[in-house]
Length: 221
Image: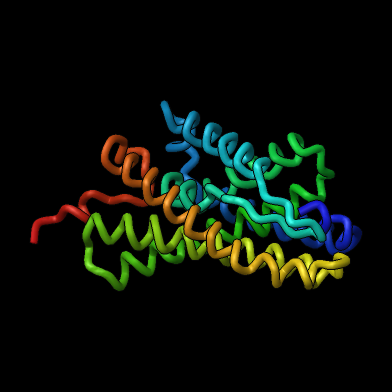
């Protein structure tokens, strides 16, 4: 989001940095750091952050401050939990900014819009699935891993594009209209990728999926 960062430099970026720090502070209090730092947990956390950072560096730049990209954050939110996912996504934003030689302000806005937002949305979808739908493994994977991840990616990419329009980036309004069909394709790709990887994790490494509770999904009826 370099175009947005340039258009909203100054107090807007300072406010975004304060907001990001506040959210990460609250997330840090809620995060299960002992789980993240024990054994393979630290590898999952740092590896996830690096993988998402590399994923963000490979994006489709439409110009005029608008770019579309797979996020990988919904999978982090499901595997690590939303609090740790927000920290990992913020590290990923820094990694992507370094790889793309972008200013620090870009990392701040990317962490907020493409990291914090989809992590919160993915967790909200997961909670809704657990609360309102039957406790079934297929529903968890399809509801939280597929539809929840796709919706989170669509909304996050739309928010990033809308922010470019609101910031007054030249040509952003026209590019926003052209980007709408591709946002849906990105959402489908995110849903498919997250659903497949979540399925593999649940089958082979269920202990590494923080939001998956076998006592809930495999309880006796």
